[in-house]
Length: 583
Image (cartoon, rainbow, N blue to C red):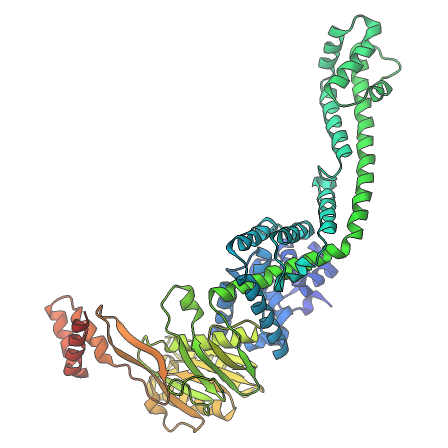
């Protein structure tokens, strides 16, 4: 396959990868999702991630139909990545994509929840040992993976996701680790500690080279200790062997037959001795390298198994930690057109430490086993969601988007239970308060084509009226609802114009979120659980009541009291009285 056949690789990127990696190696890096190699070749982390997402996800990436859908997708991956045990695991999480079949989705969820169960079963000490093992092996490569596998084995983990580690042969991996460490020395040298004889020869060579660097000093020391010219040779032998580990015979063999003077004799002896030791070191390195290569070759199957096992454990334990942190559970995949959740939580709010009211909601033909009073009706594919400002309507849309994407990525979801029908496209459109024809046109171009294409679509559209005139917005939104029904799409449309959308098709309903009053601190108190087939009200008297209570001076208060008369002074006074009484 040519590099330019991959999404996101143009001529410049192709040339860069071909020059740095070679075409074959670059293709292999893309096919195996090797982010490290692509980044080392010169791509930015973000660009490498985008290329690999498309290469790994293929057409399944088309599920992310709008900018806001893609933002939710990236937020999910960023959040999950915070629980990664290693940077390699974080890189693998960043390139997770929607999957192409329910079987793949269910299989990945099974593995994550199995990993979560195994992780939850570990005591604090063992968890710490596992985390330390991955931290110490964070450099990557075969040696790091083998050492991590040995450390995990020593920690005693063996169940569930850790089972492949327990199946490895520790004795073989010990030998392989020594071989890899020896072969992985600096400057392609055999590493220190791989062979005692080699280490000794290197130390002796270093000592002789130090002496050879200052032969005049050595000659002076020898001459001062010699008892005449005939004793000079033996004194030099004794001096060299006392200062180094070189044996007597090797020193004598290095001595020249003749020399013009003592200085030349010492210099030539040390130079010859250093050369002979270099040859001995080289020969020993070759012998040790052959032995280590043979050891590594015999352990190759176990090493490859360790690398694969460590990579998988790192990924799935990382995702298990994410699932545990947010209490994620298994969704139920159904053939019916639905997305329905019981006691769902918004990941972004939970991550931010915000108190979260769980919500039960859904559209389509679901069978959630929840009390009738809180269960959404089962015969509406489309809902129009209404209610108070700051009432959590947008958050609910985002939560449904999170659940749908998580499920189709093969990840557990933030709900006590969930039924998810797999869709081909998720259209999530947040409220964008830009009131001009360009924004309206671009919005329609992003939300309408998915409805007219073949396949199942989930529409999650927030306050469409924010981008055009109220009268036109009501007409356009009514058209979107009808189009969604006609195309058998699922949809939730947030709006304040519900009364202007009548009559809705029988497949659509109106739901409402209600503000219930002010807290003693004059904050808006909202029941975030939608009430089904009921129009929600913004209850402006609550807002005006807060403004009256917080007015800075008499003039400002008088102005807000005028507004109180407009919305109902009695309601405003009752609200203020209730808030003070609660305080």
